[in-house]
Image (cartoon, rainbow, N blue to C red; front, side, top):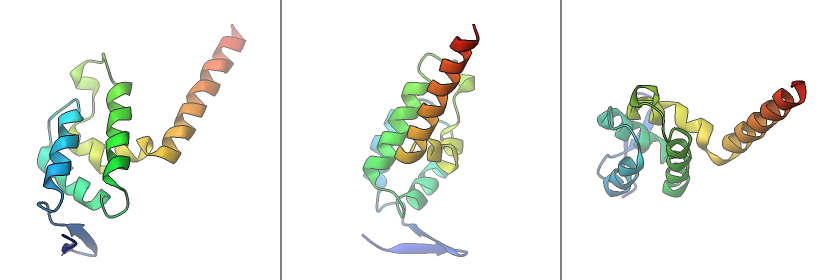
Length: 110
C-alpha cells in the first residue's frame, strides 16, 4: 500500500492505493469537473495530510459555497490542486479570524 510512483522529482501514491477514500471525498465535492486531475492531486496530498484532514477541508469548502451558482464554484481539479490549502485547519482558522475582523471593522464604520 505504500508503493510510491515517482514523476519527476515528486513521489505520488498509486491511484489505486487510496481510490476508495478519494471516491468518498469526491462525492462530497459540489462540482464534479476535473476528476482525473483531482485524483492525482489527492494522491500527492495524501503524502502530507491525512484522509480526515482532506475530507474536513472539502467539507469546509462545500459549506462555504452552499447556495452559490455552479459557475462560481471551483472545478474539482483546481480545488484539489491549490485552493484546498486555504481550508486545512491552520489556514482555515486564520481565514475565519480575518473574515470576522473584516466584518467587525465594516460594522464599526457604519
